[in-house]
Length: 247
Image 1 (tube, rainbow, N blue to C red):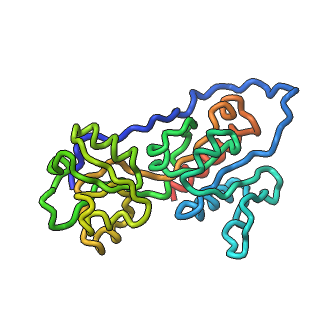
Image 2 (cartoon, rainbow, N blue to C red):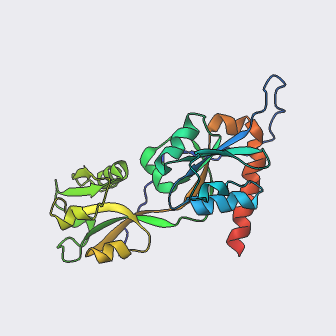
Image 3 (cartoon, one colour):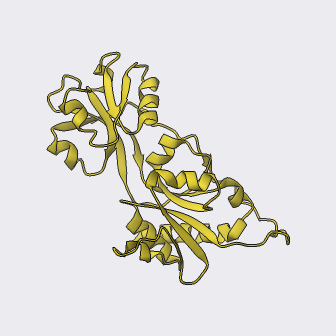
């Protein structure tokens, strides 16, 4: 599989240039740091990395737990357990100062958040796939006004717009692989981890849009003002990520 020479770029704020923060104004009452954690595939490793910096939200992993908000036993932070696609929303609107979101979600949603750290887990890729017996061996082969199924509608639209190929993007939020299997679409754009699901459904990748991994994001204003000691926790997470990468 060959890529076509470009990767999608997010419309995100990069980490602001480091600077020495001003002292917290006395009239600002410090509050507890709030972190948005994603349900699903990223949850276990998200909890593990926070445990490495002294914050324990493992109660979310208890099968008997029904709480969606818990406080760390040290009372330094609380966490919200939210749908993965909602993490940037909680951060953007200031209900959480920090969050963990997949790069794919950030590209799809283009939230107004600060993208601070690649946490080096949750690796996958966004790919174009077609049936193994398809005559389309490259995205450039897909006919104009062909149909492409995807739950990542904005990523797919942007990709084909860059290729200058007018296609119809069909939004599907379940088993996207059924699009070409049933003849509804010529191709799909979807996340791929091991590729097993594609192979079991007779599909093959023909291009990669971008690689994805878990990212630490922050509310931009809270980060710039160092509210709730965000700088401290961000640096702790940066150090934990670096140490984990060396293992």
